[in-house]
Length: 401
Length: 112
Image 1 (cartoon, rainbow over the protein chains, first blue to last red):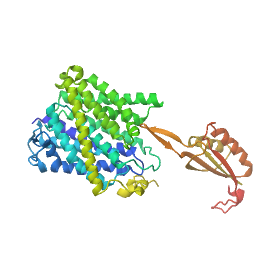
Image 2: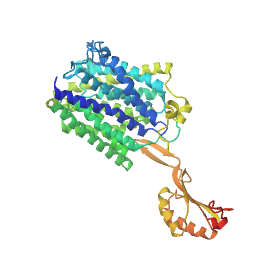
Image 3: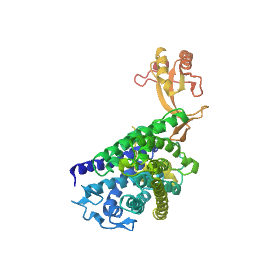
Image 4: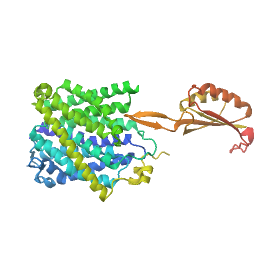
């Protein structure tokens, strides 16, 4: 084990933990005043339930010894044998640190989905869906890509979670929006607190350094490279979104700027440790550009993805995975993409995109069906008018007197 | 005595207040209100989603004054709060039967 690596990943894990409360602010500010607490609660519930489930069984399903490339075995169930040894997947850091780092990813991924069903889901339904989704969708995905599963064996590369985190949450979000149906038209859907969204978005950007640089799993040049590609792509994403919004609507918006930042972050996530610094800027700019159009998909296809999880995480993750197969360079981390003479890598990336969307979407639809027919998914009409803060949690965010 | 209700754009409040102060109006109340008239709300775009805002914020000032002040106030407000676009607001004038200053019990014009 190596002390520098250990210290680095401990810090990165705490950075990534901050992303989930940051997401609560980001989504909370975008929701309506009557739903802000319920919207924040999705993230905090995920911190609670997903952490515990991850410790009990999730971690071993994702990172236990490989079974036929599909799932991990039960070798680390209840964290058996995880203390005071090196992590099998990252031999220079303690197993506990690796497990904690991965735990933050699982928590965040489940919380990301909430942007889609916000404003109309029952808390019990959301709770059960999240728990089931971790076991039946996230754990297999994490195993396939990072745990030595079939996508890893095929050669698909995903540095920090373009497929596992962003495409997966995007596919689940699409299923949720379709199954739940649109929110009732109960007045204006304008965001209730954009400064909160900007603060949350800024903290996501901050946490993402731990997310991407930490995914090197060692301290050193690769982590440093990932840190910088992440920052460059994000800045370019801000510009990409801002330019097109300015041109089309006449005014650049703060929500556009922070959405462009997120788009850049999502797109660079799978590529952070595989592409050059210059390529990262191009990727971020493309991300801002593509995701700007991505948020119109829900209007075109008629699904009410309330806070644009599909348009930003789903589409951004897909673009990122494909562009990794285009821009990857051997000089960075041993993998060449289309532009550097390896067209097969692009094909493999495309396979990972199709596999992720298909698998996660189908599993999510099945799980939603199960949850709907047991505890129920959607709140009563009256609850939607009153707002989920009062109907689901008996609290109000703003008591101004 | 007349009551004057002045509905204006929120951004006009300070300018109108300054004009009223120049006319030696020493007291006023205002309320933040929302509503629509011929302007019929407006639209905002949030990340590609068009949001229709049906009720626009306005400010309603209420004054009770002696009859001789009414025209001066109307002229001052119209001159200050007019932009010439729909949504500038309206002024309503109505009769007031009586006024009482609670502290002293004065009635009518004395109480204004």
